[in-house]
Image (cartoon, rainbow, N blue to C red; front, top):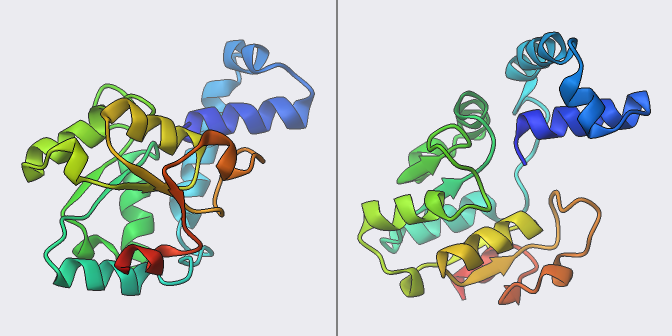
Length: 174
């Protein structure tokens, strides 16, 4: 996952090419630059938080729970989206796709957060909405709960066997 992967998939689909053909095309760099310019100006401007996200983060933070985001989205986009939704002040750590040398499903992002917080994997919980999120948590040895909405490449979230499927973020408060 990540912005470049998403761009390659979109270009391959729209142009009737394979992903390998798109990656090899001389025009990919130009397309990526145009995408970057447009996306940076637009990301977070039309999106809405899923139900109970803000309320749940506020409640968890008030209980002293350490909160982090681990995403494959590049840091410049991540910050824009989190700021647009006023979530950044609720988070203790943000690991973006370009924070570390590796991206999800590599466990380094989760391991980085656990080390900073001084928390053992068994005492953490990773919440996600995709098979990549479930694989990342499994690779880090962290329990994982999944939400049935979000971007999971058209597959039901149950197919990747998270520890629990929750209807919305409010279930984290139970």
